Image (tube, rainbow, N blue to C red; front, side):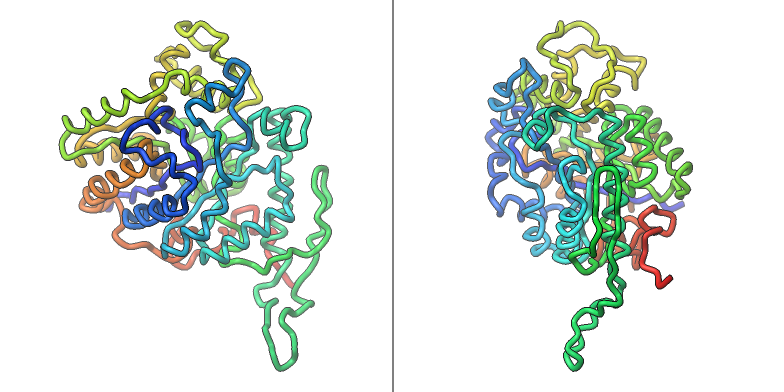
Length: 458
């Protein structure tokens, strides 16, 4: 029996402190170079050499100011502040690669469908069909305050807005321009046939888009769609819209429950559940031998910041961990933060009790997922175990000491996985959606809600 391919995404954010907090101080870390274009170009080249499907770029739109009610701890460790816009380096990375995809995080809460649709179509043009969108609704009060809202919208209201946002952008991407609208006929003097372009005509509760889309369709039309929410509202949203789902879980059994929940929602939405791909975050520390890898991890752990980790997770969960006893178990509460992150350390694993201190120590290097340590063979065995037990399709590989940990993974783990037939030696096609569904599949599947908006002559 042929083993399933392990799909790989690199995980980064345009900032200093992302999944590993405090490790920017390590002498090998180049995290401070997130402002340099060469840093991103080198990253793209490394990942394509390792036959990764995509680079997933996370983002946050506000400073992390929940811990102690101020931003000081986040600033000291460079946690998501300072940060740059994740969209702006993508076309440059696309220019130095041929197949690597780019999944970029953008929030529906603070964008307008009309302008956003053009941004993503532009990137679809400039990448040759290699763009994806990680759909988020944003959880930070600081983002709300600085982007026109008095306070953060309630969790489920943000998802209701996101549903309408998706309806509007699907119409912009799929229904406004026919495939043959651009005729470029110099003899007749017609570049675009007006009869092959029609208004969107969206009138909703939150958004109004009456006119035609500004951009002619990209290779994929709708970008490849990712989502990471694992709350009940997030799972329902993912079941309707996501082609790829990002998971945070530290045990395969936890990930499997999340996978099953989203697949059930996909069935309820009339979609083939097998068409949705699942990626678990993983941090891999690899060396030639197990002992050398364990020594490398111990070296990294010396730089991890407990206070910085508390500051990051306070913001993610909307719980000020500084106000709690660091050694008392954390209990689940409904918040307007990322509820899946609250569930991760409260209800998803009944066999384990987490205190704020234990959480901070655990996520210091690994960011909420497993830290896999060992030789190439040991790491490959563990990745295969996760694939089998969690029923996932691949991993978001974190880069706690950039670019060292990406480079180590590509140079040491990927050849072992290729030897086992688990990572492809050549890409399946030229677009990101072909990485998901095979050569020639550049548009959304017929059972996806975007397909209902395709141009028709009726």
